[in-house]
Amino acid sequence: MSSQTPLRHYLQFRDLTRAELDYLFARAAWIKQQFKTYQRYWPLQDRTLVMIFEKASTRTRLSFEAGIQQLGGSAIYLNTRDSQLGRGEPVEDAAQVISRMSDLVMIRTFEQDVIERFARNARVPVINGLTNEYHPCQILADIFTYIEQRGSIRGKTVAWIGDSNNVCNTWLQAAEVLDFNVRVSTPPGYEVEAERAGLHGTGHFEQFADPMDAARGADLVTTDVWTSMGFEAENEERLRDFADWQVDGEMMQAAKPDALFMHCLPAHRGEEVTAEVIDGPQSVVWDEAENRLHSQKALMEFLLLGRIQ
Ligand code: CP
Ligand code: NVA
Image (tube, rainbow, N blue to C red; front, top):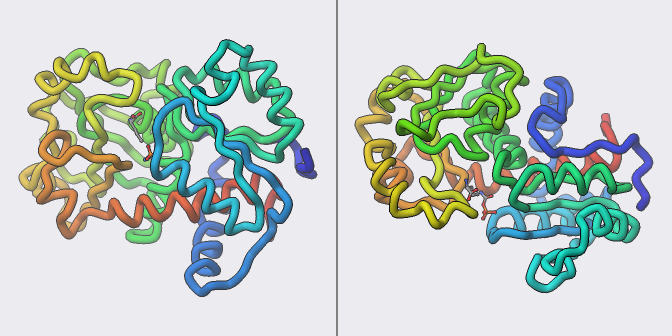
């Protein structure tokens, strides 16, 4: 426990203001440049990140673990199976103990309520590494990627095709904070729930019955798996329900000619997206994945040290 700045958490996208996000995107670009030119940058020397995973992960674990190490700190990995978390220890007690032995905690769990309760009882910053409701670190990286490729996202149009899941909810929050538009198309019965998405208003998103209408004229087309972690029992039903919500070449044609395609990964080619699109020239999925590293390094630095310049 060695944070010297006021305690801040990143549990939802809107926990950061527009000005702070603008700072973080600029900071991520600088940190990325240092990394690419092999400059040692160790502002978090002797700091310890605890990573708690109650669901599987490749990118989130890798980017946080590599990220804290590259900033001079170290990471400890805990999962439900091998810790007392899976044996009913109250989350409030776990938060007290874990945050007395570390400087920063990242959690991937099921209900948002779990991470909110953890944060209320923690002495150190807590970062949401994905919940059923939100995936704020993903959208931080995605918008950083958009800015790198096309400049400011303000006023732009993002088309979300498929399930109104944690990633979709986070795009919708981001649209309110950063002032852009999201056009969502889901199958009937899977529409956005504004309250669950944590929206303040409806002014930044529109829902469309036909995915082609959502994609028309978009600056960015994005999607995600039809079945998120924790919803596996619904997989067969979802395969049927989402069959017409696949992002394919025709849908990309409906978007602007220079539209980007994003997917948080892992992807299922032939389900939510065709191989032609995800492996095609408009796709920036590998930059998106890499940028998890750089944007989260900027986030960790900000939560522990505040603004550097
Ligand atoms: N996009 C993402 O969070 O990937 P992982 O599930 O591999 O962490
Ligand atoms: N919506 C997906 C994202 C995985 C990174 C899930 O929650 O499983």
